Image (cartoon, rainbow, N blue to C red; front, top):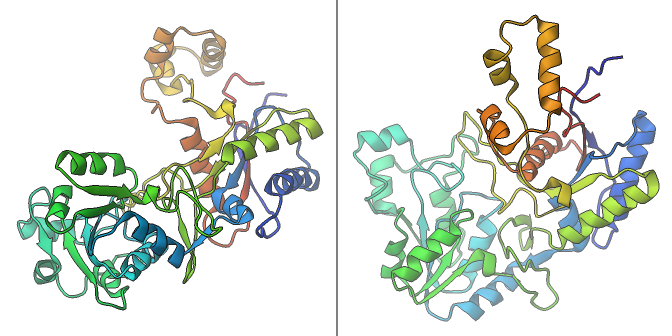
Length: 396
């Protein structure tokens, strides 16, 4: 019988995870129990995804606000600190700002505009244009921002006035806020500079260092080692962290490469199938209505098996059908396209016939698929099984 189904994605339920749990064992058991319960079998090159929060919770990878304060004070000795370009988020950055304010320093907080790095807007862009504000040139104090855009500028989805919320986080009234896209403005206010953006942090640091900054660190360098037995992330620091409680932060998980390989090996031992495994965080996609790029983590996947390296090798079916086989009957066209897919194409062939296929990394594509499937609410499916992702039209 002709195969009629391609990629299948399943969200799998798992027990509630606590610190110290064996996440590899729980993942394997959850996958195998789901397969038995739902009547499906694992196949070679299936993909198992585990959400990063599950891994971090099992690792106990948490830090307190006071841990962060201690690390900040060890790296920044002055009375003033400039904080550059954080995203606008109650869950991601607000608690980090709480720690920065708790150092007792004078905090000069610089926000990108009209939106942050991932697309959360501080103003209506049409109003910005009407007012003649140039985001490439104009530096706005909070007072000027209010004069231009009003006393209540709320995010269209969260309803939060982030400028007000960030300034009022401190109990000591030691936060001042400015809007600019020029990192060098920070040099006028402090010798100590904390770079808080995510994907552009390397460029921001480079601009500051070239401009003569004296002491620059990124939030990827804060909590990169443990303090008093706390959690840590040696690669990403506070990047990818989330609020756990009012005084505690869950960090991005570490040692994920070791975890995914152990799961792969155990599945192989129990089923004989060689699956791929990844830990996934935020998906790399942009909301077309809100204009928000969802990727607030430093990467989509902090750990994955070797079979998920690289980009898809595909031909563009529509391109081939329209340009080579447009005069054929549908059944004949199908046969010829299958032959073409099965052929061992040269690099030149692949480049020509893949026209219109975006060369995204497999981990970004599959991680985004996993994130969309599990969601961030109450679905209760933190483990994802993707089957048939590497199949194509010629697969039997």
